[in-house]
Image 1 (cartoon, rainbow, N blue to C red):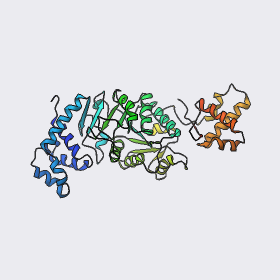
Image 2: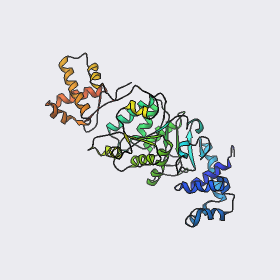
Image 3: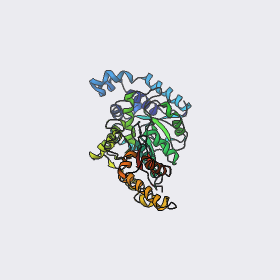
Image 4: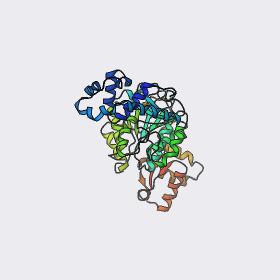
Length: 390
């Protein structure tokens, strides 16, 4: 086999065995001085190390045939433009090794070698619900855009799922940032099918890539997503939760990141919005810091300064945008804009009641502000101020 690496093949074989209990696998490798050594020592020594509980479960799987299967697998991966990165090898994310449960290896698909992708820049996770609202979608893109304008350009990491994940990946590609998709399937498949196109683009974009610790042929099942989350949390210096219900994969990833002593940030939302309740809970529990200003967020992430921030000068921006209109029209538009800024998520009907105006008048002005990029409006007609452009 071309470029054969025995240690890597043995790590690949052990990763198949200890995928759901990487601590045991790593302990075994460290105890015998390497993955290859595990396959060379008498099996009774491996059984003795594993102990009574694990010996029948794992010992029979650590065989020469397992090594041979892994070797063949590596050869097939190379033919498909993929590879396996063993823990400790160049290209294995260094931050992940700091965790107490890193996988014994990662399957990788990308244009550049992994050593030219990982650890070259900060890695930031942007995660959240699959049921993304317009508010969450806009802010997800705003956050990634702000990160793209930082002095130090980060890598955006997410899980290639629907909702926040794919929005973050697409935004990264749109704004010129590399992005990593951590998959809950084998490297030879993409899930969900709706994201196959963006996944393919990521694997073919220099600096971006797809990774997973699941062997080829692994299909998407619920438990796989839980195992994937620890990789996202562990390889990133910070995790940003955009939207989440109280229970969900995003919440688990954020809590994992906190347990790994990583920074966690959450986008606040309306207290009666189920999609923001998870974020609001993490902020209340002091697990996550609230995102209130994008320039401040970028600086707190250690990425330097940027010109993007919340619209602290929102009034002036609205006035400037409509300076050519007559005074009465400008005043009406400004009243709507400032009401939206003061009451983020306010509905069109609520604006009518607040200002005592007709629905026709309010909806016309709201539409004008939305078309000019000053506010966003979701399907339920809730209005949100947008982020100013740098």
